[in-house]
Image (cartoon, rainbow, N blue to C red; front, side, top):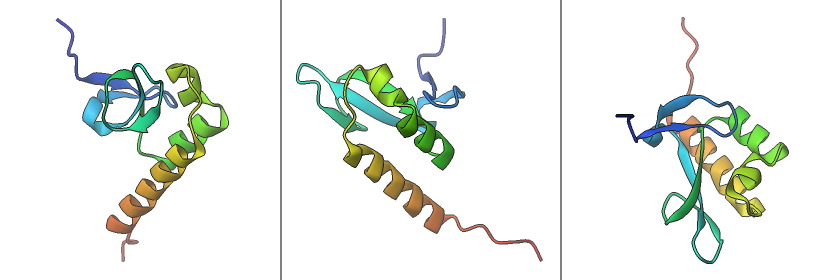
Length: 94
């Protein structure tokens, strides 16, 4: 039996456990696009700037969700990247 907790990034197509990705949901029945929670069609995205940029530029989330993805969804995800980067600064080795 296949593991049901495995997902694929809509941008880079990397396969990993679903908790390694951001979840974007088109809710049912109102077709509202939101992050993280809700029932409906889902798309998963790596928490990396390159995946976020490609998903926005090539409208990959909109295509997978079959719905318009509001710009504020991309802004929130970009803010999450900024917070993640500030919590994990890269220090050059001496």
